[in-house]
Length: 556
Image (cartoon, rainbow, N blue to C red; front, side, top):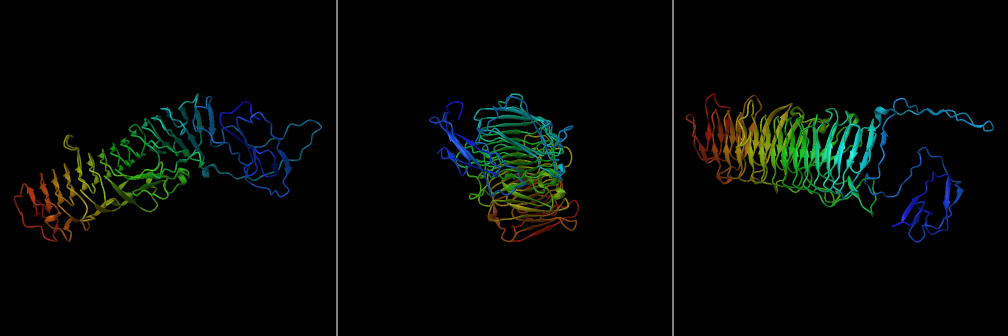
């Protein structure tokens, strides 16, 4: 019986290793699950459980598992220090010792078991659940401890391969001060408008930050009726703030639903905004940025044995995703500043393919990329992309986008090289060992009126559909006003318009800057090049190859 009357039914699990059988005629006993349930009417009434030998028992190698009843999934019950060791504590031998017995007692020799457990092959996982909290909690996560979140002294841990924190439904604030080397550290914001900040991390580990949770919502799929080993569902995704500017290595960030503000690190990050009108700043490093795509992760295997942790998602799975907590990936109007570095930015949704065998989360290097393309020909948001310093690849999308190769209209001039590849609408870019080989537009029926500024550097611009406004900026630029391809193979540059191009593709306005520019397409071009200008109606198909130095060739 219980010590006091419960406010709700209490179920007690009876541990059974299979060698004994439980039985009782008391209706409170559940023979199928080996449980006893008390309520406010019978809590003080004893129950008799009869034990008998299970004659059909067969020895099992696995240890029995105690299944406790559902808990509130809050950390407030941890008031003393909780220490968790993933490996063998230093100086703590695990060998069995001979028992201390009375003179009248006897015992057999201890059996010799050959148990081979290699710690370098183990994946020790610490899941910390505070998802049941509806308070606005604050906590600090380091490489060895988690404090705050309503706990007393908090949790201290060591020798783990995965540390994963599940926050609740309030507007939570968690600061990551450090992470451990070779460890995968994951923070889920859960419901509410959360603030996740990073002031330090280990460059040899993996840090993953979710404004809500992964795109498919699997990490938060438990309900009162459907018990799982994951966090409880939430229905209040908020506008999250994620700032990883203080990280010591690359970070993977997914905003999820809501209008999120995301700042990456000074290293090469993977960043996806998800649904909503997001602000994304890549900061430093060679970043891969997706305005409206989603991220899912597989952290079931330790980092040094994992093959593919990160998956980019462009289409939500209405059948298999957890509908309550998944992100439907509804496109928004995002503001993206790629920051310093050779970045790849896809304003809406897209794919950055990498070489076979590359663990995506560990690399943003262009030498590992084979193809860049955007997807989603039926919708898109009106986005603003600023490439900032570096040789960036910038892809707009289906709607009217504003794209700046440099720092934009209000920014200072870029110091150093800043040669960008800019596609106003849908396109595809092929890359071979870090060298761009072919750039093509991918759909003559998709796109809108874009504003494109190449700014400083030798830029390649494919404006695409619609009546686009293009300023090439300084440098030796190549501009294609509508559809076609730019072939950079064979140590040359060749521009070619696509079959079906005509003036109906849009009344483009192209302004050339200083430098030896080459333009194919457009109805208004200023200033007219002083030499070798060939004004004519845009033909159905036209081509232009690398001109002689100092020569500008123009097709209208």
